[in-house]
Length: 157
Image (cartoon, rainbow, N blue to C red; front, side):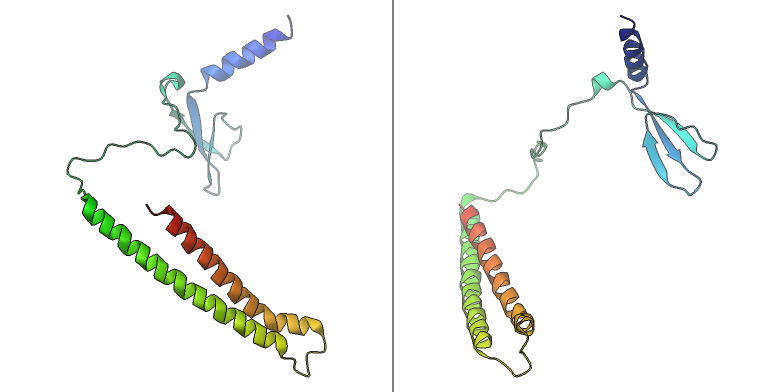
């Protein structure tokens, strides 16, 4: 029973001060916010009243965008125009995909050519790896681009 009294007093004290927040500025001009007023001579604090904590609205669920109504004067696009835009987007993405696939094949061909070459100063295998790395990076870039374009194409209606 004696152990519960300090816990109850602490809970009452924190709930009483829950609606007060302090904005403090230290001597170097840095702002900090706290629900506890720091004890220091060189810190200037201002109490901010946050109101009753019971009247706040709950935070939106993670990942969910807040719903806002569309204004009445917001321009709307008819279905045929939207379908034409979607088709244009699909054609653009498909042409980009074809270009990236060509670039990937070219990069693979260049890497194969470089792998078959050996110069006299590359007795150390690390020098060969260093020379080939930009070609491997180029291939990885084109593969990522292809993956991203395919992902976008998958999102189309």
